[in-house]
Image (tube, rainbow over all chains, first blue to last red; front, side, top):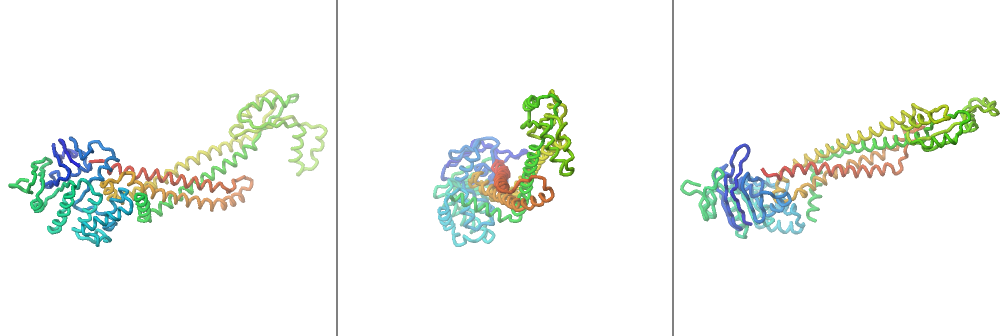
Length: 231
Length: 296
């Protein structure tokens, strides 16, 4: 799914500008890093794509969906094609690893057999099959994030949004997660990843979009995290 | 099939996870539906008694000498609320008087047999107690009617009581239904808020609002249904006992027999309980999902 922002601005009440006049085009299958200081608008941009945030001005289209006016039913259908990884994992503590991942397929109405098979495949892919009966508090940070990744990709979304997915992890674990995300992108999934991790951005070079005070200040095809002290 | 299984499993989880609250809700809705059922039974019995008593309410119109009873009866029959008219000859009237008086004073009326002084009269039955006064007034102005006698106070009291019972039942019903709806609504809302995070994730991964709402609606129907079912069983068990006691205290009143009455009422109560729960649950969860899906 192509993603297009046309003159998107978002002003939170009373007058906090989170995004300002953003023009952006992300073709299907691309890997994009969003970099910028805290409060620069990275998360708002991601949340605009999931329509948790509605722009004050401008137009966002994702594939065939125009997000300006979308019904609740269409929004549900649209979101089925978007996977989200949060910095704080957002796992359900009362469900075990298997249930946390299977939950997505269940709410989408997949038949029980498919739920079992697909969840098994994904847990195998993220190396968590042997820990499937454990609960989130019994897992390490890296394992929890791998569960979150598994949950985000279990329904094979076209777009994967990752908001600081390595923020709470040590470097080794962060690399593991990064390789997982790269492998998902290699299968054709568009990935947009907001990050502060300079090492990962520089080690796995991809398109880099720099944001500051809600504005896109740079957009490089194979960029680095920090170029000459700028974003 | 997967959704179906998920919905029911999740609804059961909700009921069990908040078992204390679930129990309280079932008990509350049981009390409320018992109250509704009891007030319906009270009203049905009151109506039944009033109907029977109204059927026995008559107006006696005594005729002036030389008046044709048939002519007056025809005019009376044209009046509204009149259901039956009987012409009472002096002989019938005397016979009735003898039946009432002679058990206590034998042969005291024997001297009247040859020279019966009792007048001709017509006996008018009306369909409802609050129509008695109007019919009596209309009868009194018919030519040839000398006097009209009826149980003014009894008719008035019956009419008032019938009206009060109707109004009381409506008020009881409204209060009970509101109380039950509020309790169910709050229970479901607490369940919804306890799953706030889960619902947020469900909506983010593309679950429809209807899918999100279904387990809560089923939870509501389970709780409301159990409450109303419990109330129906309790009503059924207690009705006979209460009626037996009332018949001892008020043997002259014709109460309704249990028969199919309580069973029918039970079905209505369970149906109403489930419907009410459905509406309360939908309102509780719909407000939440609408807010959750609204973009900032």
